[in-house]
Length: 452
Ligand SMILES: Cc1cc2nc3c(=O)[nH]c(=O)nc-3n(C[C@H](O)[C@H](O)[C@H](O)COP(=O)(O)OP(=O)(O)OC[C@H]3O[C@@H](n4cnc5c(N)ncnc54)[C@H](O)[C@@H]3O)c2cc1C
Image (cartoon, rainbow, N blue to C red; front, top):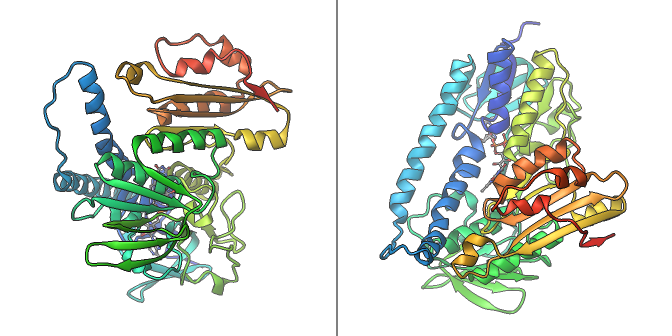
């Protein structure tokens, strides 16, 4: 049977764009791609990129404060949200254009519309037009999930954070994951009074306990009111803002309520169930290690599969899919030892096992240190940095590394290479320090803090 396309990709985000570009540009497949919103997807339009730019914007007040301790006279520093937002929007437009060009240069046909599946080899666009394809890749990502509480329509999600007309004076962030914690820090850095409610015992679930505690303490020390074990029961509109009635019995008023309580895969009404696919509990698409679903011609990559919801993972999955199907090279992305960063202030960088998970696996040694780094100590600030290595007693391999420090995201990327290569604690010890740095502590921790 002759198909209109070798590959039809639904979703122009991190995973879909990479898969389409490699399949077409490198392996010569005829590729169509449908994107219902803006090219680039969550990461570029409403995720990593605008978020990181806001992180940068929000970090300046601390820098100014430190600068004064170093002898600088800066006068009054004022932040102009609308000037920043205008530049931010221009940057996103530029990036969206770059993604579009990359695809067209690679020979991909772009359909700026929603697409759904009709059968294992057929997609339908919103216009009713249909295309057949030998393979279909679902890369539709995820969408913020807001629980059903009275007044939920008064809250915004991370999607709207980048379009605020003005900054609020008082904000409530609901949620304890990396997105909630990052936005709590961003808003605080921009001068907003921030309260964070999280129903669990500690924010940043899934990360190393000691590191989570360190970040939470640092956020609180900066003035963010982190309330764990607290959830919102209902939201009410008042004359002057939004009242949040919480499970701890408090009623407080805010100008902005941001719900960052998780994301759900974008699979609703895509036509997947009609193909005979059974979706996961939250709507995620089950796939094998080559990103193939139970319907052989249908594949899925990225957040929609609910494996590890990070941009570089979606990109690698998309690339591996294209190499497997069109490059004649069966390639499975290895989801082990994926490093990640939480861009709170201070940042948290993490790779490998947490102390809690490692303890369950085998006998370990833990090397952990917390200290006041030179730069902020000089400025008279109480900030402490945390570095931690989890080491296998048997193999001596470093099983995990967790860093809470300014630029921890940059540090963990490099530590991840060594750990991925199977570095032992003794390899770390043999590595000569770079002095004076914060990360030199990673190669100078001689005695285990504890064994388990
Ligand atoms: C606020 C925030 C901050 C984040 N920060 C980071 C970070 O710092 N680092 C990191 O690694 N990750 C971060 N992430 C996660 C990262 O953005 C995602 O993991 C990544 O974008 C997933 O890529 P994807 O290709 O699976 O999906 P997406 O990028 O979500 O792309 C899916 C695309 O499909 C389109 N689509 C959906 N349904 C259809 C349809 N039926 N027809 C046509 N098009 C459709 C959507 O419009 C979207 O453009 C962040 C996410 C958020 C929300």
